[in-house]
Amino acid sequence: MTIQFLGKTLKNPMVLASGVLGNSNDILKRVHESGCGLVTMKSIGPEPRDGHKNPTVIDLGHGMINAVGLPSPGYLNMENEWEDLEKREFPLIASIYGGSVKEYRMVAEFVSSKKPDFIEINISCPNSEKHGMIFGINPQSSHDVVSAVKKVINVPLIVKLTPQAPDIGDIARACEDAGADAICAINTVGPGMVIDIESKMPVLAFKKGGLSGPMIKPVAVRCVFDIYKAVKIPIIGLGGITTGEDAIEMIMAGASLVGMGSAVRYRGIDVFQTVADEIDTWLSDHHYTLEDIIGAAHKEDAS
Amino acid sequence: MTTITDQKHIMLRVEKKQVDGPAFATLFFNYALPFKPGQFIMVWIPGIDEKPYTISYHSKNEFAITIEAKGIFSQKAITLEKGDLIGIRGPFGNGFDIKPEDAVAVVAGGCGMAPLATLVEQLPENTCFIHGARSREFILFPDRFDMDRLFCTDDGSFGRKGFVTELLENEIASGRHFDRVYTCGPEIMMYHVFNLCEKHHIPCQVSLERYMRCGFGVCGACVCGKQVVCKDGPVFDSSALRGIKDFNTKALLKSGKEVDLAQYFSWRCK
Image 1 (spheres, one colour):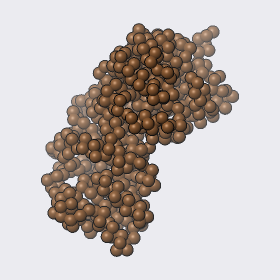
Image 2 (cartoon, helix red, strand yellow):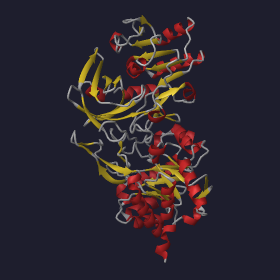
Image 3 (cartoon, each protein chain N blue to C red):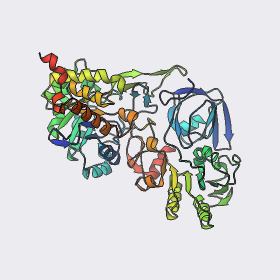
C-alpha cells in the first residue's frame, strides 16, 4: 500500500502526530521502522522552552489530557539533531510554532534549510500562554501566518488546525487560499480540566490541558468532514484513532493520511503497522482501494 | 478502588515516615500496589511537581518510597509527615528479570540501593551483594537485609575504600560464577559495571534514569537513543545496552535539548 503524498512516496498512510515520541532522530527512525509511513518531529519553537511542570500528561482511561507546554530546545540549538536528520532514510515532517508571524517565519525559514520533507505549522496549541492558538481560531490571522511562512520555505506546507475554531472549514479555506499544501486536523480538544477532589486541586500543573485519544474521535471526524467540504488540498486526519476501523472512518470523512499519537499508549509503538494492516484487511474484505473511500461519507452530501 | 490502574492519580496519605540516616527518608503507604522490582511510580505532591520514584519496600498491603533530598521536589518530599497527601500513578516500566535458580550479583551505588531493595528480598542468600556510596551517611539500609554484603565508600568511612567495580572484579577473579549482574546507581558506575560484565561475558541488567513526563511511553521526554526509558525500561539488559549510544554519554533536558550527561545531572540535582 504505497501512498503518494505531495510528491513523496510513503510506505503507508500512517502518520506519527507531533508531540509524541518526536524527540530525537533515533526514536523517529524506530517509529518509522516499526511501521509508520510519515513521522513528525516534536514542535520546534523560536526560543529554548522547558514546557510546564509535571503533572503534564494524565491517562483518563478513555483518552488523555495533557499540558506539556511546547518544550523545545529552540530552533538554533538543535545542531546534532539536524545533522542526524540530514542522513535520515525516512520521510519527515518538521513541526514548528511561534508567538508571532515574525517568529513563525524566522523558524520556518531556518527549518526549511534543513530539508525536512514537509513543514507543519502548529497554529493550534492550547497548552502555552500565547503560542499558536490565536492564529488558528481566526481565518484572517491563519491566512497571514500561512502566507508569510509559505514565502520563505521550499518544502510543502502543512497547517495543523484546532477544533476550537468556530468554523474549522473557514480556517482551512483561508489556509488553502494562503498557499497551504495540506491540512492536518485536529490538534487536542478543549482545553479541559481534571480536579483531584482529595487535594482540591487541578491535576495538571498548568491546570488546563488538551484532550486526546478515543474520547475525541467524533469531534475529529466532524472536523475533517467539514474541512473536506471546504478545501481541495489533502487532509491528514487525526484525533482518537486507535484501530483500522477508526482510520477507515477518518478516511471516509475526507482524510488522505491518518495520524496517531495517543494510540501509542494503548497499542504500543507498533500500532502504526498494526493499523495499516487493519486498513488493508478492511479494504480487501470490502473490495476497495484506499482512494475509493477518501471522503466517501460525503456521498449523501453531494446528492 | 482496590487495585491501582495506571490512569488518574490514586491519592494516598503518608502512613509512617522512617528516617534513614542524615541523607534519606522513607515514606510508607497502606496500599496494595501490584508491583515488580525495578518498576516505578509517578509521585505527585499537589502544588509542587510530579516525579518518578521507585518502590523501596513492598508487601501485600503496604509500600514505601525512599527519598534523597537533592532538588526542589525531593527537598519538599523529605519533609512530608504522617497524614500528608500525595498522588501516585503507575506502576510503570518493565522491572528486573528474575530467575530464582540463577547465581547473581547485585551492585548498588548511593540511592540506587532503593530500587534494588525489593529485588534483593527476592534473591537467594548466596547472592553476591555489593553496596557502595560516597561516604557512610549515603549507605542506604545498612542493616536491612538477611544477606552478607560487601560495602565500600569513596572515602573509606564505611566498608572498604574504593569502588563497587573493584569489589565485583575481585569476586569474579576469585572464580565466582555469575549468571547475571543487577545494578543501579550513578550512570557512570553502572556503565563501568556493564563494561566489566561485558569483559567477562556476564549478562547485566541496568536501571536507567531520565527526565520523565507521562511515564507510559508517549511524550518522548525520556528517550535514550531509540529506547523509551519509562516504557521499554527503566531496566535494560546487555543486548539493549550495547545498542544505546547515549548510555553514559547523553541525555535530554526538560526542553528536549540533548546534552552531556554531566550537564544533565547537574541540572537534575538543582
